[in-house]
Length: 144
Picture 1 (cartoon, rainbow, N blue to C red):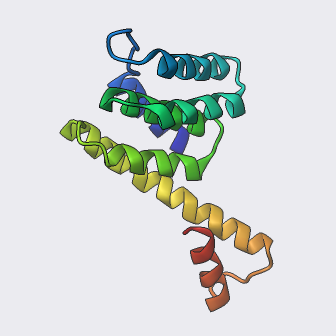
Picture 2 (cartoon, rainbow, N blue to C red):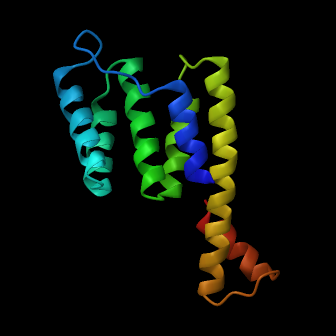
């Protein structure tokens, strides 16, 4: 359901189309490399290029575009912590519409629950007993 929600949000609000007037050449190179790798299901390479694009983003458009791309690739590769990070960064942008803010907050709530559930699973795997203080401490440590 988490992947579905992320893809639905991005589908509804559309992926930004890059044009020469709105982006730097270097940003477009990283962004397009990420999209190409994504199309071949090379999510590691796609994430790397998307993160590089985000690092050099100069305009609000570039920042928003690269964060949305990171979110898509993170969802496709089931990287829940990175989904959370991208959503939190998106919510810090000043050029979001009220609808985008609402949808990103909803998605962040779902992703945050997934992070806690992942933490619980890992703590059980590590041998902690659910319902104990040590289990709770383990979950808190893993979900920071």
